[in-house]
Length: 297
Image (cartoon, rainbow, N blue to C red; front, side, top):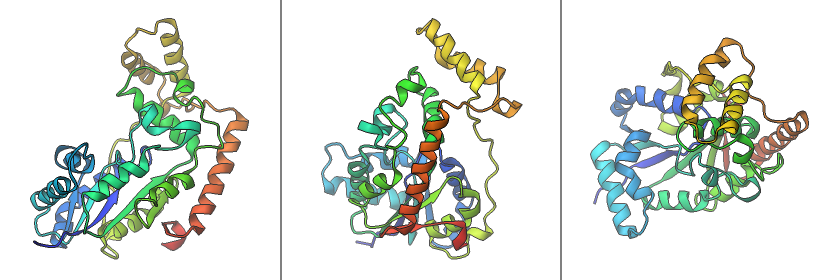
């Protein structure tokens, strides 16, 4: 049986420019194929690979067979494959995103372990982006409103004190499933994009030749839009919140100059900032963390 290709697994996190990174790499798919590098985007993961990486009651032999068949079908002959799916560690649903005390992606260890088991025998490298939790939580709440039921922001983050969402703790739990985790920050993303592409594809210098994908970013909520949404839903919880959300975005868009939604007090924001700074320092000096920063460019 032919040896499995090596794999770079881009596992998220949500709302860290993951969609832009996916689109940029997918746009270079033909050039990468000529270099022996296959690309599997999130839609293809969900259509073909999900039964393997979320195995339910399937046996190890079944999930490995499913994964091999998918790689052979989507990336025939590739020596290396980039797999991109930001829902590997969890999703933006409250219980999948935040555990007791604000644990980020509480089921990350098991979910990552299951995903990696599908590629047993292959060299797999895992990477993810992180972001200041204050904005990460706001963006995830805004994203979840587009797909899930109505939930006020403070209910969404209930029980999450500013000193508890720690990316270092998530990395520790991920390292129970994989030796090394490659990490970069949302804040550094534009500067380190070439490095990320080099790491993901295994092609040194390739990232510098890739043009970042031009895409219309989904704007966040303005403070006025969020206040409008909360007031309308408080008055009538049975309203269609998605319709109210669309109206609020249109009436008070961030891109129209309205200040962004800021649910945190000055003290909470300062605490988030301090903890995030501590996390960045810890991760930059931690063992088995491959840290991508502009300083290394």
